Image (cartoon, rainbow, N blue to C red; front, side, top):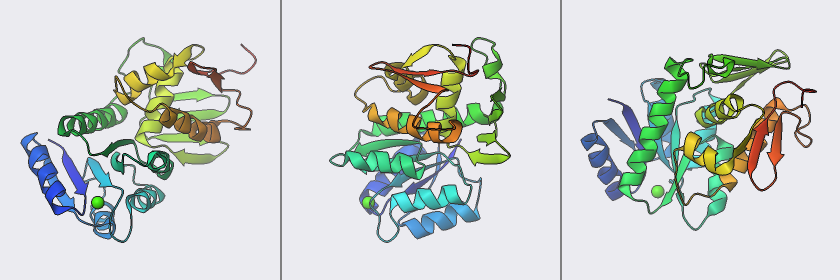
Length: 244
Ligand code: CA
């Protein structure tokens, strides 16, 4: 059983979600504005396993809530509910630190599947260095390259004495790229293997993640040497420079 916080001011929608998530076996709490959501999450740090966060809230909006959470080093998985007519919200959501998004109006089954995906990935990240798919070094809890260390368990990137916290999605995407080091990884495979999505998803969200990851791992993000673009297909991670 997981504990889920729903942050939504539309009572009708919040109650419907609560009812259905409880029917799925989750323990659910509802917060109707950003401030009380932050109180719940920051004062009971670790007690919730995931958050369903609406963007449009009275007072502090969803972007502000997730930014404040991350600033407070709280990396709970956040599924953001955005307006379908505003694709810029998706990018803004990821930039604020959301892990996944769903445009409104959504199918309940899709929301439940996305939430399940986030909870499962959190478990992977925390419990396992060893979901060995191919037994490579990339399946250890940490992966080091060129003086940088990605700690998949702690969701951290350490480089030059500085530590950057990663969101669940960032860590999961990095793990996928590292596992496939040297090989081109298509956007489609990222959608399927990292996001757990099989259709109809805007791949620009992936590009936005890559921009952020480059900021973390590249000396010069404008001229990436580790995280290369395979034009029209996807991306390729190179650990050791000078070997390609
Ligand atoms: Ca709302």
